[in-house]
Image (cartoon, rainbow, N blue to C red; front, side):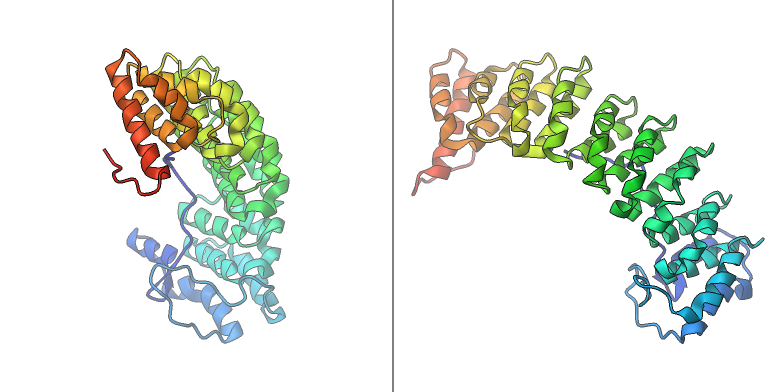
Length: 371
């Protein structure tokens, strides 16, 4: 199943020519920056530890040696000063301070409340830098973000969800609050919430019913995000998806079948419902059901229904059913043999081709294969 993303978390700031990429972009955007103010915050950090920077590959994230551990106690004063600069009147200083704190990682957790407030900054680049900094700080940062999920500004709600997504499993306590955002009035927030729950497994499985309901969303990107996440949730998602195979909207039925295909053999309890969809009024649903059944165990009881689909009036549905039967191997031979006597020449041709492919794969020394 192909997933198309409308948006995603802004990429982490990277080092380019010795400067944080977010700051380079500020120059390019025409922002007036005083070099002394611009580099003050970074300078405080680097001079405090006598940091000697190793060569960095262009485009790769810059990771300080202490990023995944507590900052040295000698930096306490610097952290306090940098936290104050998060409220500086200069946007350049606020952004540089947030970036410096990001380099310190979890050791700068005292700055979390101020960084969370910075997600409301009017400057988009500063908000993004603050979000990435919070994402480096783990569960302590996650606890400060749920209140922002209720903000009146949709862009702030979206950024808070994206930050929790980056924190991942350490933000598991926020799953209920994120699940509520699946009903947000803004489509971008709903999409971000659907993707965020994927990073919080297994705790986010509690949100499966809410995610399944989102497959009915009016926005294509939101539906795609929910489908992608449900596909990672395994057999627990199958009952909700099976119900959606009966939805009155064809695109919802098709998407449910696609997600069941993604789950694969663990979705075998949905085989009877998928076999029924082979007779759906919509050819896209029939094709999606045939593809899903291909991922199930060969002894799935749907082989006769797939063989009957070789008579389908839609070429793509017929061809998909034939490929699914080929994938089922010797278990499909009896049904395919019956189709050889069918009145429909198209069905007979597909049965011959499927039998040839099965023989090629299973009979030692068989020569051939391909169309």
